[in-house]
Length: 116
Image 1 (spheres, rainbow, N blue to C red):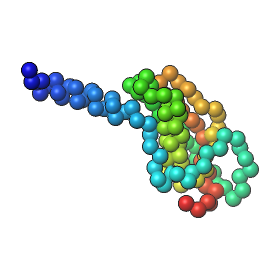
Image 2: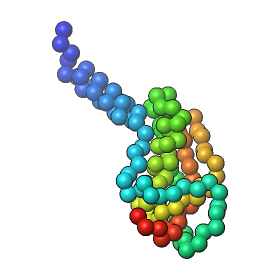
Image 3: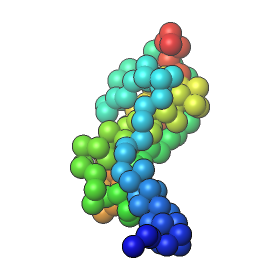
Image 4: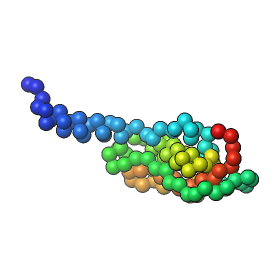
């Protein structure tokens, strides 16, 4: 029996986004040089850029992704956003926020005038 057009649309409309959402947030090439620190070191030649929140996971993916994947995705997200803001250094302001469906970091972005 051939599947109906509506069942294929429904299956593709549900499964494809769900499978796609199982991958963590990738690190953009331009953000690879962004450094993340968990303690406030002396900032020499650094300018404050702003605050940033990095997060990964949602109600559909938290059961399908490991804590390591969620954490890596959230760190990639914060580094990508820091680079987009013009920063090259992020100081995490508080320990990781672990919600039931997501992992989130909050940090301050600085431009320390590093090459890259």
